[in-house]
Length: 516
Image (cartoon, rainbow, N blue to C red; front, side, top):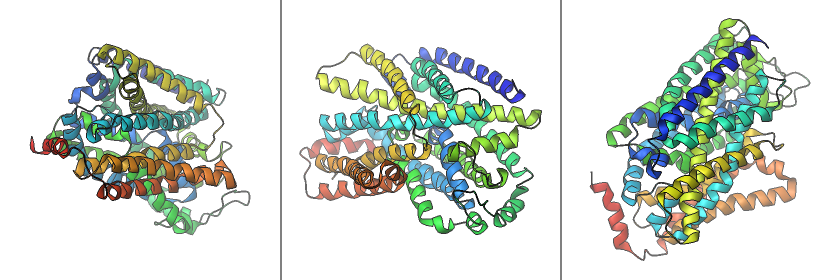
């Protein structure tokens, strides 16, 4: 066993013990459904801000997006991190956090399907939303598993990737099923702070590598870069140093829109606003989460942009998904300090990814236990039964995601983009218009959900029949952006030609904005 493997195993053991302990101490505070799903609506600014950030940025951002876009686009890919911080975080908090908190509290809504039912008086919409969440967030979770599996396989090449994915699944199950949202709130605060320190150290280590030579060296060396004759994706120094993406400008813009505006409709992101305790916490959380996203997002893509220099222009054996793991091994595997930092970075990425998994799993399990099953049964389910069922479904969803991740679907980014586009494309219109406008009708909300689903579904079917699913997966960012745009337009347009059957009820809902 090498020193890198030894230190990583020690760090992993300590981390597993800490997660189990946090799950244990959180169990007593998560015996009610409100406590398990949204922390009793009493989570502070720092915990919510870091929970938002760590759910946003998992290992997929480093292994998938930063690796692929940094390799292919170069320095211009850093704009994705900037867009995520400004559009996906800052604007989301400024526009939606307070209104979401007030309205979901007024409606006593714990989940996105629950919000749809009570805002639009539609049990059918609740069922449809729950089904979409449970089906299409499985690939999302699988992408996180694959990202972490690729990372740990780079350190332990003799161990099969599926073994690491199984370990990750078990760790997630231990603290999530026991402690729920409160356990995550405890861990995210500490993990987020350490993650910022770790990413700053990693950026310094990467920029200090001999092939990079600092910021000035990075610009000069990328400008003089020449692809190898064997490079399957050749590029030029002008492309890699073009601050606006060069020939990839359109592709860059699409990915900024998908990964930034997509958070506006993702239930696992919006759910953070349900739990924050008051307006003052929202003001502080807005600043904290934005700073966090700037550091992590821009740091990740900056690291990705150095990959061609550090790896000598040679794509690793594992393909594009192996770029960042190979960079980490090259930069941090030499010397005791570097090896210790490598172990810390692996655990930090594990922490961030488990936070993402936790949010996705809770969202999906609650969609079935709280929203789908009681509605189909048409009977009131006891809170104790819902709690037990939610915990069981958390385990089931973790298992389904693990099985899906073990299938031979090599491109992590495609998995994430596909799931991100469908779920956000369905929900972004009904959710946003629902908290801002009294004029939005049930039929208009349905139009938003179905139009988003049809845009991605029909596009995927047509492209797959003509050119195969691989091309459809590659087009998933464009499909996701189109789905979100169509949903945002369809909701008010259809609502303009339909009527609310119960305007008094809608007025009562919107009175929540005047109660504080």
